[in-house]
Length: 199
Image 1 (cartoon, rainbow, N blue to C red):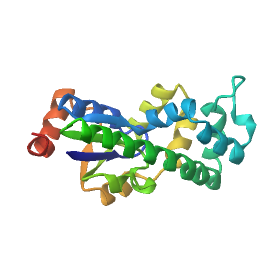
Image 2 (image 1 turned 180 degrees about the horizontal axis):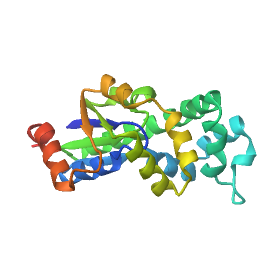
Image 3 (image 1 turned 180 degrees about the vertical axis):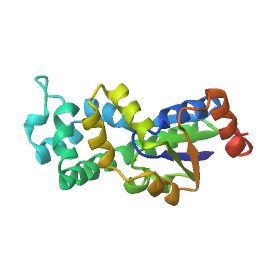
Image 4 (image 1 turned 60 degrees about the vertical axis):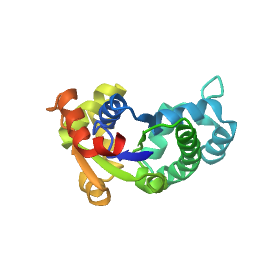
């Protein structure tokens, strides 16, 4: 079973690449979505977050409100590092379990989509790592549209992460997803990279 790790800065279009890999038969794990599932299902994660950031990050139902948490962590590097340390540990354990399940089910390949693939230790679970990158203006527009936030807020989120070169220089392969490729063209590019390993 081939395990592919996708990473890259926010707004680079990793989800689009993940969908293309799914169409090639990969079991796909969106680590951001997995994190949000854990926020709703893991009392241990919620307790660790409130111990660090206080109960003001909870909504009226006692659930973590990521919109309340975001301004705290994106304006304070230490707070962001603390959030990442907590989240990465929980997500890595959940991903390892998903990989075991996929292997037992006889999956040909698994793709992990994780912004912090390299920093979290998730990259060590992968056979190959892929940097998905896009120009800054393309990313900015995607983040604003995806999250319904202002240009300034989107720029703040981008500034909290490394640039494209960081990912390209640390991954085995790179895919440029600047929005000019059709889904079919993107799938063809991925097929050239992985078809022999996924067959």
